[in-house]
Length: 124
Image (cartoon, rainbow, N blue to C red; front, top):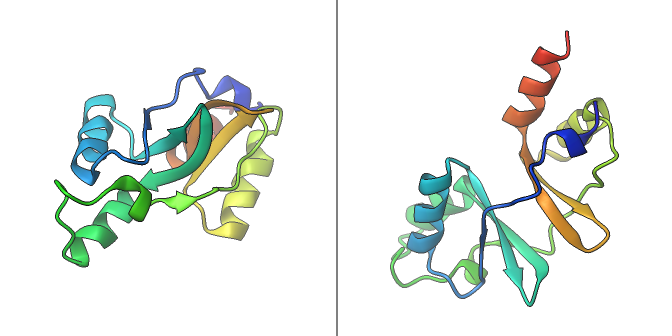
């Protein structure tokens, strides 16, 4: 199975100028634990629930703090034709929990560790 089968072609996105509260609201509304940060149609970052926890622990005001100040800039990406097993190995080696899946310059979605585990469990 390849990653392309796990992404629906639609990622939850926010702009870098969105507040942390807005990003958190998008995560809750869409049931995801990370959002792609897009500016001028390009992926410029990723904000995860872990980033939000760090912001809260640091005393950030979620209504005032901007995504761009807490996101991971220029995140590593992975191609949609990569096999799920290879993606799992890469996540284990890097410690990442979310992978933006990109075809050329087009963001197809973000796969999480949970997505990959479900794919492996359903592949038997």
